[in-house]
Amino acid sequence: MKKPIDLQLTQEGYDKLQKEFDDLMAARPDVLTRMVAAREMGDLSENAGYHAAKERLGYIDRRTRHLKLMLRFADVVSAKGTNEVTFGSVVKVQNGETEVEFAIVSAMEADPTKMKVSDVSPIGKALLGKKVGEEAKVESPGGEMVYKVLEIKSSK
Image (cartoon, rainbow, N blue to C red; front, side, top):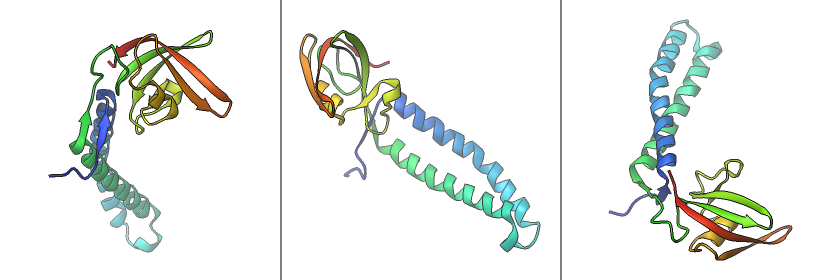
């Protein structure tokens, strides 16, 4: 059977989705209770509490369906080893005088503020397959940047 989605995640990304799913499922009964209580107040056309609870319930149901699909078909991938940059690797690179550490993750998990770059981003693509001592060249609006790979670690 062909998967309806092809999704690779790190263990951390998978755990984050699972936590969001669990939190939404825990919140659902409270929202249902509020909706029932608001419905018992009478006229639904002017009942803001009812409409707010109904909207929230709709969001929870849509999001949990989406999360359930992602969790079911996600492939949890960890770095294969430490001799080559792969999905899930944590890479220490040098750019001029500056040393930086990037985690190579999926586009869904990417967060540049936390130094998590997507495997399909220009930096991620340039680093994939590199070994310690090799250089990755990345075209940016400010010009070409060169990152020298100093160290490769598996993700946590």
